[in-house]
Length: 134
Image (cartoon, rainbow, N blue to C red; front, side, top):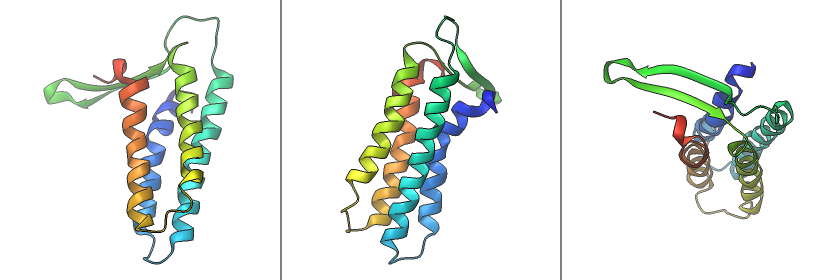
């Protein structure tokens, strides 16, 4: 599981957004709890990742590389180093805090929370793991 922890951390919010889209209309409380649960799980994974990170090493850790679209030579490659590890943890923590801060949103909660979780995918890939997403 160590090798795929980053992939799970990155794509867990997308899974949460998909689950939210399956919730029947009128269940705003359930939608909020699902969003909080998935981001809370993301925080727990980030804490575990932060604890397992070897600070004495200067190499990329927890790296995953896989061919994504081989015909165009597009690969999926993620990993963390000493600079990106705290940022991954902070992104997960702020995501959870933002979901809790958005708890009072009652106008179209399904759309809001599913799109919020989808936005987290972009946050992880764009800002912290971007140099390795080729």
